[in-house]
Image (cartoon, rainbow, N blue to C red; front, side, top):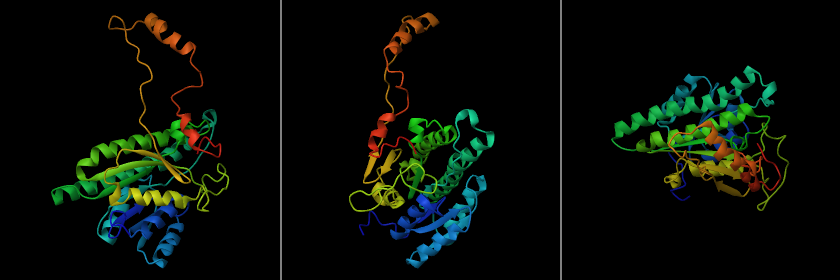
Length: 306
C-alpha cells in the first residue's frame, strides 16, 4: 500500500462502531493497518473486535455512552494504554427520535443532542487535550485526525428532524472550531455527510447498485473515504464538509452572501428596512430559504434528506 494511505502503527477510536457506518469505518481503518478502539453501547462492539482480530488486525472494545462526558477520556485512555497512542477519532455514534416540531418532547430533543452533539464534543475534547499535550512534549506538531459525522439534514432542515438537524449543524460548527483550534498541533478535522443504508436509515433508502456492483448505499463506501481522511494523504485537508454517496464524494462550498442591505445614513429605521428589504423579497421565490436544496441534486434516487 502507498505509505501515504497506510495507517500501520496508528490507533483510531470509532464511536457507534457496533453496526452500520461505524462498523464499516472500523473495519476499513483496521484493513489499512490501524489499531481500533471500538465503542458502542453493548456486545456488538465485541463482535466487531472479533471480526478485526480474525482478519489479522488489533482492536479492543469499550462499551458505554459517548454522551457521558467522561467517556471521551475513557476512550482516549483505552487507545493510549492499549496501543501506545491516539491518532484518529471517528465520531459516528447517533440515534434518531424523529418527530414534527409540535410533537417533539424534551426527551426526544435531549436524547439526540446528547448522543450526536455532546458525544462528538466529549470525545473531541478528550482527544484535543491528548494531542495538545503530546505536541508540547514533542516540541512541535503531532499526528491527529478527526472525522465527524454530520448529515445533509443540517443543510435542509428536515421537517421531521428538528432535533437531528440542529445537532448535525452543531457538529459542523464543532468541526470548524476543532480544525481552527488544533491546527497548530498538527490535527486535521473534517465532517462527512454520508448517505448509507444502516439500521438507522433503512426506511429512507432503497437498495440499488452502481458501477462496481456494490450496493450504492453500502456503508463500506463511506468506510473507504473515512480511511482516506484518516491517512497521511489528507494532510492538507481540514475544516471541510463532504457528502459521501455511491461512487462520488462532493466537497461542499462555504455559504455566500446573496444580498447586502445598507442604511443610507448609517443607522436603519424600521421604515428603511421596509423600503429596502420588503421589495427584494416580493418577487423572490418564497421556497428559496437558507436551506441548501441544490445539494439534493447530487441524489439520483430522488431522496432529499437523511
